[in-house]
Amino acid sequence: MVRRTIPLKKEYLYRKNLEGKERLEGKEHLLYEKKRKIRQALEEGKSIPTELRNEEEALHRQIDLEDDHTAIPRPISDDEYAKATEREPKILITTSRDPSQPLSLQRLELKLVFLNAERMNRSGQVVYRSLDSSDVMEDSRIIGSCVHVQILIFTTDKHLRLLMRLLNLAVLVSLRMSSWFMSIVVYGLVISHLPFGPTAYFGLHNVVSSIMFVKKQGGPKSIELKEIGPRFELRLYQIKLGTVEQKEAQNEWVLRPYMKTTKKRRYLGD
Image 1 (cartoon, rainbow, N blue to C red):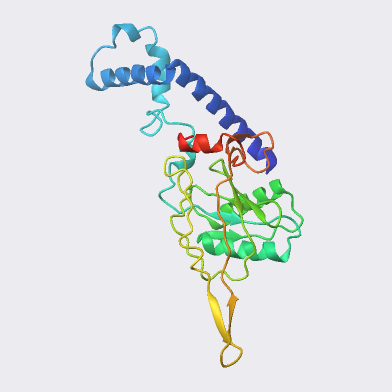
Image 2 (tube, rainbow, N blue to C red):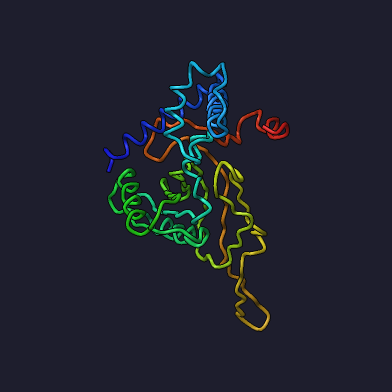
């Protein structure tokens, strides 16, 4: 499984690097315009433009290999989002090895927050083995080609790290202990079709008043209130250009709330 993914990663990095160079030099748009002029001349039965006659043979070979989908230049990230609207992304939720009872409970809560999520017991597997098993689940349960998103919980009991594998996005979520999850009201939870849609938008609607209490009468004039609702905190922490097993991946964005210039950057729009 690992050997199979190495060529895919190399191809992705090569195309991404090539795309960046072409954008800097403006070659991508220039090449597309040349092909468009040659294709238009062939369809209308006109002669090839004079400035393109020296390149016509090489460009014609590239045109023969293209179809309606590949003729238009698209960013490298579109490979992962091309069919995102045809099927909902699949989310995989797992924990660190030998999880504690609070962490297992928080995994159940996240299963209800993300409606299309699947839970997996990690057992003694290392991180990249968990990714391989998620690929097997995709191959066996899903029919057709579509975008799948795996969210992996990977760190200590109170801080859970959610990494979306195919979208190259990492989100750190800070959770506090919670013993009952039926009154969680999530508002504006959006993690879909990044980066073309909203980047990452989370919101918990009226968290304090959504905590439920049970009134228990201990006597004729005494009432005890017992908290059974959740205490839940969700905040974007980190966006990483890579997957969970890639330690060398770059950080695209990291929350640094304790820097001296944090308030200034937030006021100025970062």
